[in-house]
Length: 119
Length: 285
Image 1 (cartoon, chains in turn blue, brown):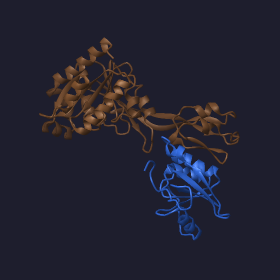
Image 2 (cartoon, rainbow over the protein chains, first blue to last red):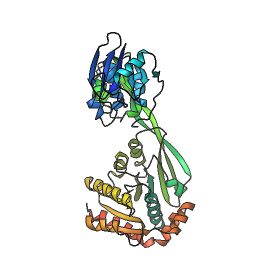
Image 3 (spheres, rainbow over the protein chains, first blue to last red):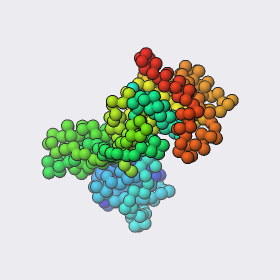
Image 4 (cartoon, chains in turn yellow, cyan):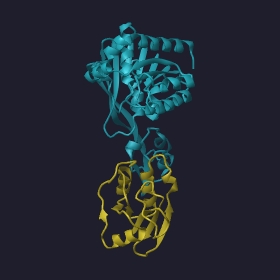
């Protein structure tokens, strides 16, 4: 399973970005092989609108089966949901901690957008 | 003649001035229509109380994809500026509330898999009372975009001699849509830091759109010359000053501030109307 984590940096020590649509980038982590690929999100970070939709497309195109992020808005949720991508919410910590918690089954799956658009 | 009433800051008295002018023109037997373009928070008919005789549903066009024809080429998603259609796992996903109805995806689809369907976004109410024709837009709850509905509101009563367009606050797309193509823009503001800040933005907007404009000062108070100074400095005509009085507030709270203003400030309304008339006739830009 591949999981895309919204992040402020490029490695496992970097903090998880609490924003999804306007995250700086995503670390797409393969839970089986422990390999990761960084995907830049600068273009969507600066988008006037539709950032959540395009970011969702970015992680779906990168092959992610799940997302770990701080918050997710309604349009990003709809888009991720259309591709069957699971969304886990995580706050306060780095990417490594988020992955560890996901492995231990400690992260909560969200079945709704937890914030309004443009929060 | 189309006269748009805008402000920048909200709650400065746009509707009060619009309504007072509508009443002024009606008293002179000039055919007048008031169009409530503030479709997210319409309030004209709270004051006008015109019985609504007709409701016209307004729609926008959005894409519908026939997945049996779609090959997943993604051209629809590439042309869309607003991410209203995106290719997800080789199938287009439509996020209808993002769609600006440009028709690009429909035109660009090589398989003709996209058709345009109507989606209701709101209603326009129509009515008439005391010689004033009324059209007011009301955007459906949860709709994100008001300009298409505002455009529909502006279609009504083209035969009226005077059309007053009561615009939304701010200077963003809904206001641009409301004031676009008008013959004169009346900016109603108040001498507060917030009022002045937004008035500057609204004046900038008027200049960028090359609209002749003038200012009405509302809730003027003695000793506060900030708004008057702005008009002088910017060389913008200050057409009227309505003072901040308890009586107007009391009347407003009862919903009959319009008749009071019309009576008490008839010379101010006259001055506004005459200035607009002469400016538009002279073709001043």
